[in-house]
Image 1: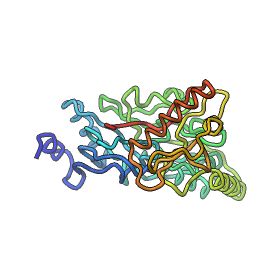
Image 2: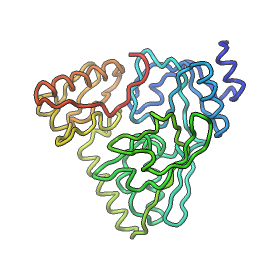
Image 3: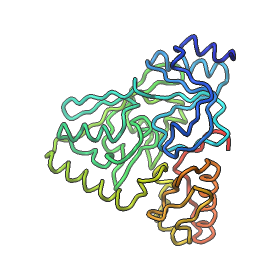
Length: 302
Protein backbone atom coordinates (compact mmCIF):
# COMPACT_ATOMS: atom_id res chain seq x y z
CA UNK A 1 0.00 0.00 0.00
CA UNK A 2 1.47 3.35 -1.08
CA UNK A 3 2.17 6.14 1.37
CA UNK A 4 -0.16 8.41 -0.60
CA UNK A 5 -2.99 5.87 -0.43
CA UNK A 6 -2.54 5.68 3.32
CA UNK A 7 -2.70 9.47 3.50
CA UNK A 8 -5.93 9.47 1.47
CA UNK A 9 -7.32 6.85 3.84
CA UNK A 10 -6.87 9.31 6.68
CA UNK A 11 -9.37 11.76 5.16
CA UNK A 12 -11.72 9.42 3.26
CA UNK A 13 -13.32 6.04 3.91
CA UNK A 14 -11.98 3.03 2.00
CA UNK A 15 -15.05 2.87 -0.24
CA UNK A 16 -14.42 6.47 -1.33
CA UNK A 17 -11.02 5.64 -2.81
CA UNK A 18 -10.28 3.48 -5.85
CA UNK A 19 -6.90 2.65 -7.30
CA UNK A 20 -6.22 2.21 -11.03
CA UNK A 21 -9.81 3.09 -11.93
CA UNK A 22 -10.52 2.86 -15.73
CA UNK A 23 -11.63 6.26 -16.93
CA UNK A 24 -13.56 4.67 -19.78
CA UNK A 25 -16.22 4.07 -17.10
CA UNK A 26 -16.46 7.77 -16.32
CA UNK A 27 -16.31 9.61 -19.67
CA UNK A 28 -18.97 9.89 -22.36
CA UNK A 29 -16.37 8.93 -24.98
CA UNK A 30 -16.18 5.53 -23.20
CA UNK A 31 -12.42 5.58 -23.68
CA UNK A 32 -9.36 6.21 -21.53
CA UNK A 33 -6.90 4.40 -19.30
CA UNK A 34 -6.79 4.17 -15.50
CA UNK A 35 -6.42 6.99 -13.03
CA UNK A 36 -3.88 6.26 -10.32
CA UNK A 37 -6.48 7.33 -7.77
CA UNK A 38 -10.21 7.97 -8.12
CA UNK A 39 -11.85 9.55 -5.08
CA UNK A 40 -15.39 10.60 -4.18
CA UNK A 41 -15.38 13.19 -1.39
CA UNK A 42 -18.84 13.75 0.08
CA UNK A 43 -18.44 17.02 1.97
CA UNK A 44 -16.72 20.34 1.51
CA UNK A 45 -14.34 19.43 4.31
CA UNK A 46 -13.37 16.15 2.63
CA UNK A 47 -12.94 17.88 -0.73
CA UNK A 48 -10.71 20.55 0.78
CA UNK A 49 -8.67 17.92 2.64
CA UNK A 50 -8.09 15.86 -0.52
CA UNK A 51 -7.02 18.88 -2.57
CA UNK A 52 -4.77 20.12 0.24
CA UNK A 53 -3.14 16.70 0.44
CA UNK A 54 -2.54 16.73 -3.31
CA UNK A 55 -0.89 20.14 -3.08
CA UNK A 56 1.29 19.07 -0.15
CA UNK A 57 2.46 15.96 -2.02
CA UNK A 58 2.72 17.68 -5.44
CA UNK A 59 0.18 15.16 -6.72
CA UNK A 60 -1.78 16.29 -9.81
CA UNK A 61 -5.55 16.38 -9.38
CA UNK A 62 -8.50 16.85 -11.72
CA UNK A 63 -12.09 17.72 -10.81
CA UNK A 64 -14.44 15.34 -12.61
CA UNK A 65 -18.10 15.86 -13.33
CA UNK A 66 -19.96 13.73 -15.86
CA UNK A 67 -16.89 13.30 -18.07
CA UNK A 68 -18.85 14.70 -21.00
CA UNK A 69 -16.19 17.07 -22.32
CA UNK A 70 -13.12 14.99 -21.58
CA UNK A 71 -10.71 12.63 -23.32
CA UNK A 72 -8.35 10.72 -21.01
CA UNK A 73 -5.28 9.14 -22.57
CA UNK A 74 -4.97 5.36 -22.94
CA UNK A 75 -2.03 5.27 -20.54
CA UNK A 76 -4.20 6.87 -17.90
CA UNK A 77 -3.89 9.76 -15.49
CA UNK A 78 -0.96 10.00 -13.10
CA UNK A 79 -2.76 11.67 -10.26
CA UNK A 80 -6.09 11.91 -8.46
CA UNK A 81 -9.43 12.12 -10.23
CA UNK A 82 -11.76 13.90 -7.81
CA UNK A 83 -15.33 12.93 -8.68
CA UNK A 84 -18.15 15.29 -7.78
CA UNK A 85 -20.80 12.58 -7.56
CA UNK A 86 -24.08 11.90 -5.78
CA UNK A 87 -23.26 13.98 -2.71
CA UNK A 88 -23.01 17.06 -4.92
CA UNK A 89 -26.15 16.37 -6.95
CA UNK A 90 -28.92 18.12 -5.03
CA UNK A 91 -31.02 21.06 -6.24
CA UNK A 92 -33.92 23.21 -5.11
CA UNK A 93 -36.11 25.94 -6.53
CA UNK A 94 -37.13 29.07 -4.67
CA UNK A 95 -39.07 31.78 -6.44
CA UNK A 96 -37.34 32.51 -9.74
CA UNK A 97 -34.09 30.91 -8.63
CA UNK A 98 -32.70 27.40 -8.82
CA UNK A 99 -29.74 26.38 -6.68
CA UNK A 100 -27.96 23.25 -7.83
CA UNK A 101 -24.89 21.37 -6.62
CA UNK A 102 -21.89 20.93 -8.89
CA UNK A 103 -22.72 17.26 -9.50
CA UNK A 104 -26.34 17.92 -10.51
CA UNK A 105 -26.89 17.27 -14.22
CA UNK A 106 -27.55 20.41 -16.25
CA UNK A 107 -30.34 18.62 -18.11
CA UNK A 108 -31.95 17.82 -14.73
CA UNK A 109 -31.73 21.51 -13.79
CA UNK A 110 -33.58 22.28 -17.01
CA UNK A 111 -36.28 19.75 -16.10
CA UNK A 112 -36.60 21.27 -12.63
CA UNK A 113 -37.04 24.71 -14.18
CA UNK A 114 -39.81 23.33 -16.39
CA UNK A 115 -41.52 21.75 -13.40
CA UNK A 116 -41.46 25.12 -11.63
CA UNK A 117 -42.66 26.99 -14.77
CA UNK A 118 -39.37 28.88 -14.99
CA UNK A 119 -38.10 29.90 -18.41
CA UNK A 120 -34.54 30.43 -19.55
CA UNK A 121 -32.93 27.00 -19.25
CA UNK A 122 -34.62 25.25 -22.16
CA UNK A 123 -31.36 25.32 -24.15
CA UNK A 124 -29.68 23.20 -21.46
CA UNK A 125 -32.08 20.26 -21.66
CA UNK A 126 -29.92 18.15 -23.95
CA UNK A 127 -26.50 19.12 -22.60
CA UNK A 128 -25.05 16.01 -20.88
CA UNK A 129 -22.67 17.68 -18.42
CA UNK A 130 -23.00 18.59 -14.77
CA UNK A 131 -23.67 22.04 -13.38
CA UNK A 132 -20.06 22.34 -12.22
CA UNK A 133 -18.63 21.42 -15.61
CA UNK A 134 -21.12 23.71 -17.35
CA UNK A 135 -19.94 26.66 -15.25
CA UNK A 136 -16.28 25.91 -15.97
CA UNK A 137 -16.80 26.00 -19.74
CA UNK A 138 -19.81 28.35 -19.89
CA UNK A 139 -21.80 25.66 -21.68
CA UNK A 140 -24.27 26.72 -24.30
CA UNK A 141 -26.41 25.70 -27.23
CA UNK A 142 -28.75 27.22 -29.81
CA UNK A 143 -27.72 30.80 -29.15
CA UNK A 144 -27.85 30.69 -25.35
CA UNK A 145 -25.09 30.29 -22.77
CA UNK A 146 -25.01 29.51 -19.08
CA UNK A 147 -23.83 33.01 -18.23
CA UNK A 148 -27.18 34.31 -19.54
CA UNK A 149 -28.99 32.74 -16.57
CA UNK A 150 -26.23 32.39 -13.99
CA UNK A 151 -26.63 34.44 -10.83
CA UNK A 152 -23.79 33.45 -8.55
CA UNK A 153 -21.49 30.49 -8.05
CA UNK A 154 -20.17 29.08 -4.78
CA UNK A 155 -16.54 28.01 -5.13
CA UNK A 156 -13.74 26.54 -3.05
CA UNK A 157 -10.51 28.52 -3.37
CA UNK A 158 -7.00 27.00 -3.36
CA UNK A 159 -6.65 28.36 0.18
CA UNK A 160 -9.67 26.33 1.30
CA UNK A 161 -12.02 29.30 1.57
CA UNK A 162 -15.63 29.39 0.39
CA UNK A 163 -16.47 32.31 -1.90
CA UNK A 164 -19.54 33.38 -3.89
CA UNK A 165 -18.77 34.91 -7.26
CA UNK A 166 -20.89 36.34 -10.08
CA UNK A 167 -20.59 35.19 -13.68
CA UNK A 168 -18.82 38.49 -14.41
CA UNK A 169 -16.25 37.78 -11.71
CA UNK A 170 -15.71 34.36 -13.30
CA UNK A 171 -14.82 36.08 -16.60
CA UNK A 172 -17.15 33.88 -18.60
CA UNK A 173 -16.75 33.93 -22.37
CA UNK A 174 -17.31 31.55 -25.25
CA UNK A 175 -16.67 28.11 -23.72
CA UNK A 176 -14.41 29.54 -21.09
CA UNK A 177 -14.14 30.96 -17.58
CA UNK A 178 -11.35 31.64 -15.11
CA UNK A 179 -12.37 28.76 -12.81
CA UNK A 180 -9.48 26.47 -13.71
CA UNK A 181 -6.83 29.17 -14.17
CA UNK A 182 -7.56 30.47 -10.65
CA UNK A 183 -7.60 26.98 -9.14
CA UNK A 184 -11.24 27.25 -8.08
CA UNK A 185 -13.63 24.34 -7.58
CA UNK A 186 -17.32 24.88 -8.29
CA UNK A 187 -19.50 23.67 -5.42
CA UNK A 188 -22.90 25.14 -6.29
CA UNK A 189 -24.52 27.44 -8.83
CA UNK A 190 -27.59 29.63 -8.66
CA UNK A 191 -29.64 30.32 -11.76
CA UNK A 192 -31.89 33.35 -12.08
CA UNK A 193 -34.85 32.65 -14.34
CA UNK A 194 -38.22 34.17 -15.22
CA UNK A 195 -41.74 32.85 -14.73
CA UNK A 196 -43.23 31.49 -17.92
CA UNK A 197 -46.05 29.39 -19.29
CA UNK A 198 -45.24 25.75 -18.70
CA UNK A 199 -46.67 24.72 -22.06
CA UNK A 200 -44.45 27.23 -23.88
CA UNK A 201 -41.42 25.94 -21.98
CA UNK A 202 -42.31 22.35 -22.79
CA UNK A 203 -42.72 23.12 -26.49
CA UNK A 204 -39.34 24.85 -26.64
CA UNK A 205 -37.65 21.91 -24.91
CA UNK A 206 -39.29 19.46 -27.29
CA UNK A 207 -38.32 21.58 -30.29
CA UNK A 208 -34.66 21.62 -29.28
CA UNK A 209 -34.75 17.91 -28.46
CA UNK A 210 -36.01 17.11 -31.96
CA UNK A 211 -33.29 19.28 -33.47
CA UNK A 212 -30.64 17.39 -31.50
CA UNK A 213 -32.03 14.00 -32.49
CA UNK A 214 -32.15 14.99 -36.15
CA UNK A 215 -28.72 16.60 -36.34
CA UNK A 216 -26.51 14.96 -33.72
CA UNK A 217 -25.16 11.38 -33.45
CA UNK A 218 -26.70 10.75 -30.05
CA UNK A 219 -26.63 6.99 -30.58
CA UNK A 220 -22.81 6.86 -30.26
CA UNK A 221 -20.45 7.74 -27.40
CA UNK A 222 -18.91 11.17 -27.93
CA UNK A 223 -18.05 14.35 -26.06
CA UNK A 224 -20.61 16.46 -27.88
CA UNK A 225 -19.25 19.18 -30.13
CA UNK A 226 -15.60 18.26 -30.49
CA UNK A 227 -14.32 21.61 -31.74
CA UNK A 228 -15.03 25.18 -30.74
CA UNK A 229 -16.88 27.36 -33.24
CA UNK A 230 -14.28 29.44 -35.09
CA UNK A 231 -15.12 33.11 -35.56
CA UNK A 232 -17.23 33.60 -38.67
CA UNK A 233 -17.49 29.88 -39.42
CA UNK A 234 -19.11 26.62 -38.34
CA UNK A 235 -16.70 23.80 -37.46
CA UNK A 236 -18.92 21.06 -38.91
CA UNK A 237 -19.24 22.82 -42.25
CA UNK A 238 -15.49 23.39 -42.52
CA UNK A 239 -14.84 19.72 -41.72
CA UNK A 240 -17.33 18.56 -44.33
CA UNK A 241 -15.89 20.90 -46.97
CA UNK A 242 -12.44 19.45 -46.26
CA UNK A 243 -13.81 16.04 -47.29
CA UNK A 244 -13.70 14.50 -43.84
CA UNK A 245 -17.27 13.29 -43.37
CA UNK A 246 -16.96 9.70 -42.12
CA UNK A 247 -13.16 9.87 -41.82
CA UNK A 248 -12.08 7.21 -39.34
CA UNK A 249 -9.16 5.63 -37.53
CA UNK A 250 -10.20 2.33 -36.02
CA UNK A 251 -13.56 2.88 -34.34
CA UNK A 252 -13.00 6.63 -33.97
CA UNK A 253 -14.88 8.51 -36.67
CA UNK A 254 -16.01 11.93 -37.83
CA UNK A 255 -19.77 11.52 -37.60
CA UNK A 256 -21.56 11.17 -40.90
CA UNK A 257 -24.63 12.80 -39.34
CA UNK A 258 -22.80 15.89 -38.00
CA UNK A 259 -19.17 16.50 -38.92
CA UNK A 260 -18.61 18.58 -35.80
CA UNK A 261 -18.76 15.40 -33.72
CA UNK A 262 -16.03 12.78 -33.38
CA UNK A 263 -17.65 9.56 -32.19
CA UNK A 264 -16.68 6.18 -30.78
CA UNK A 265 -18.34 3.55 -32.96
CA UNK A 266 -17.45 0.74 -30.58
CA UNK A 267 -14.02 0.15 -29.10
CA UNK A 268 -12.07 3.25 -30.12
CA UNK A 269 -8.93 3.95 -28.10
CA UNK A 270 -8.33 7.47 -26.85
CA UNK A 271 -5.27 7.65 -29.10
CA UNK A 272 -7.45 6.86 -32.14
CA UNK A 273 -9.94 9.56 -31.18
CA UNK A 274 -7.12 12.06 -30.77
CA UNK A 275 -5.59 11.02 -34.10
CA UNK A 276 -8.88 11.74 -35.84
CA UNK A 277 -9.09 15.13 -34.10
CA UNK A 278 -5.55 16.08 -35.08
CA UNK A 279 -6.07 15.01 -38.68
CA UNK A 280 -9.25 17.09 -38.84
CA UNK A 281 -7.38 20.14 -37.52
CA UNK A 282 -4.56 19.61 -40.01
CA UNK A 283 -6.72 19.14 -43.09
CA UNK A 284 -9.17 21.92 -42.29
CA UNK A 285 -6.24 24.31 -41.85
CA UNK A 286 -4.77 23.19 -45.19
CA UNK A 287 -8.12 23.45 -46.99
CA UNK A 288 -9.58 26.66 -45.55
CA UNK A 289 -6.83 28.35 -43.55
CA UNK A 290 -9.01 28.16 -40.44
CA UNK A 291 -7.50 26.77 -37.25
CA UNK A 292 -9.90 24.63 -35.24
CA UNK A 293 -9.48 24.51 -31.47
CA UNK A 294 -10.58 21.49 -29.48
CA UNK A 295 -13.53 22.02 -27.17
CA UNK A 296 -12.77 18.65 -25.58
CA UNK A 297 -10.20 18.70 -22.79
CA UNK A 298 -7.23 16.33 -23.06
CA UNK A 299 -6.04 14.80 -19.79
CA UNK A 300 -3.47 12.14 -18.97
CA UNK A 301 -0.92 10.24 -21.03
CA UNK A 302 -1.67 9.25 -24.61
